[in-house]
Image (cartoon, rainbow, N blue to C red; front, side):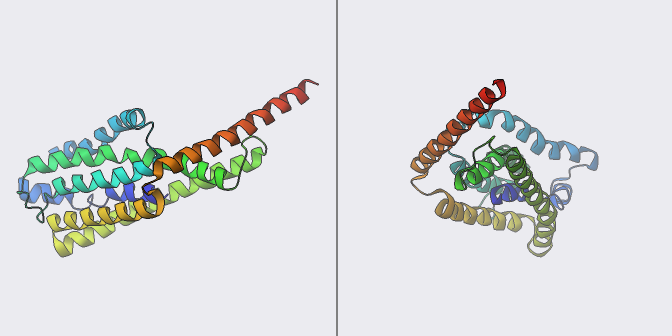
Length: 227
């Protein structure tokens, strides 16, 4: 759920000041502002289709780390980064903006199924044995997903706006670029690790065993119903 919250923060923290920067520094007209913000939405729309295809075999925990790594690169372009010596350029911003929207699918899409399956594996919950428990688990995880998503969308623009007022646009993007790299380190150390592929294989084996038990239980219930 933390990955979901960070992804939502990534696409919302600049909403309160991005249009101000485009108008003051690059002379973008108010009537054209919607086109720039739509770049973020359309890039995510395309990634929601492509990411599940191209990252199908990549462990979800690794997808989170990849997302944060690529997001930090996106923010470096969106600044453009003063620390990296990038020139002030609208072209750089228009490179970073669709990148930012595209890569967030690596967090938004796998977060919910990852949370559900982790709970199922941790507590050995066999799907179908207790419909009430299954529904309760889905409700709790979905509620938590929505809570983190909406809380982050609320806090993101407030924090981003405060940083913009204090540090300015380019420094704010540099700060968030480094915050993203910190998230990479935290998630890699505590949630991913070098043996992520091996751990994912073990996890998938455990989930396959639970599914096998679930299928056998459903077959047994069908036989009992026929008798």
